[in-house]
Image 1: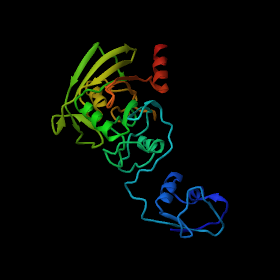
Image 2: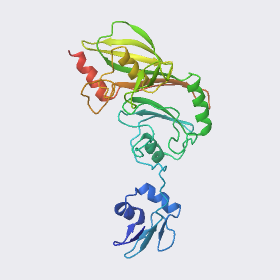
Image 3: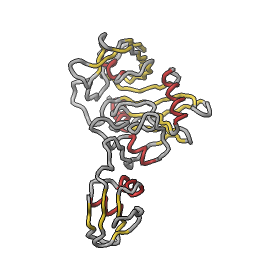
Length: 296
């Protein structure tokens, strides 16, 4: 691609961001890699263009697997040289996937720092575990490969303790329960998971009632296993689906998504071995709805 400059005294990265589909951060990287040349020469992002300058852009530079850094307001609960603990809002996908390369937490992390583990490749830098798009709460990120390896082993050995809060539909009659039901892909809808004996994996969820309301119950949930959509599937299976879940209820839901929040996490620091404990409050939408139930 070749562009003839029609303005002057503007930074080249700013000019190209306004005249191409590339973001300013990507343009900066392309300039560093000499994939963009001004009048046949390499220049810095701060270089100001002149009228009739010729800009050549390497059309083969941007690969399909390139994950672009995007500015994002990250709610960082804790950070040191090895890890980051983030309170992820509802509505944010953790990492890029098929058809979704932008506006994920990974895009935001790549903009925030270049210090992320690459153990899981280009599309999942720093990502040791994940939570669903419309599930909010604590997420642990590795900044180094050593930290990533240690944390991955902690998850594998069930040494990372996570507790969720959820608002379920209906008044749950027991104070506690354990759901032991295998989960696999739904044959009728491949985007869903379901309790099934076919091509499934063991899944165990522990439930404890926090408070009952007229039509809802606030519960805490601890997982023995980490299957896709596990809590949502198990709650639907026992007849008490999570409120506002757009996938596992037939209700009309708001864009906020399911009222499910990862609010507590305990683990040993991967390097110092120090015991780490974090809690984060409910999102405002969740808390305000709970408060409204108190008035019923």
